[in-house]
Image (tube, rainbow, N blue to C red; front, side, top):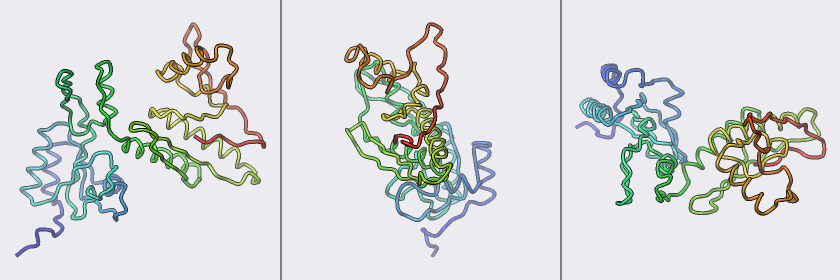
Length: 278
């Protein structure tokens, strides 16, 4: 009698059938398979044989049917923030990445419910709920995963060891402290740290995570058209109309009549201080 838990690898016939369903949205590249081999748990990574990226429910149904017929396991994959190890393809098979199924299909304000596709994140749902008076309250674990990965990538790209602390501030807010640690007595290290700082700030801002402690020479990097910038501008105007508290800090430059994009002030790094922590 065969072992039902024995590895069952995807055959060339099955891969060809899956390509007929999703086209070039099937990957057997090792880098893609490695990315889908683990979540955030301590369990050892386990690579799938292939990763497919469906965009419709019908495609998912056909993929699962094909894998079931071939007796090959399937593993659903979302943001990769799992702590339980259930996204690891311990028996090989096909990983179904659902991130491209990210449409909010219906919002029922009166019923206080919504119909969404499997890849919708809570941030995407809350964006769709704007101006409805509703909000989807969940823990920000997925955001913590995204921020941590962005920080690790920025730090490693400049040769710094990632030192990252994430704390839950409220039920919907997390605080991430990212340290850039180096020996300032070594020539060129200040410049390397500032380059890393700018890369880090740029990555976070580009993905919608504005630092709450921003280096003074990076004020112009803020999006002065964003909702958070407008809120800060309104609060400072109401609470500090004379600009006595932290002048020029934690806010973008004033809007001009032409609404031209601000020119980044790259500033310099003095021996008296290094880049602020995010």
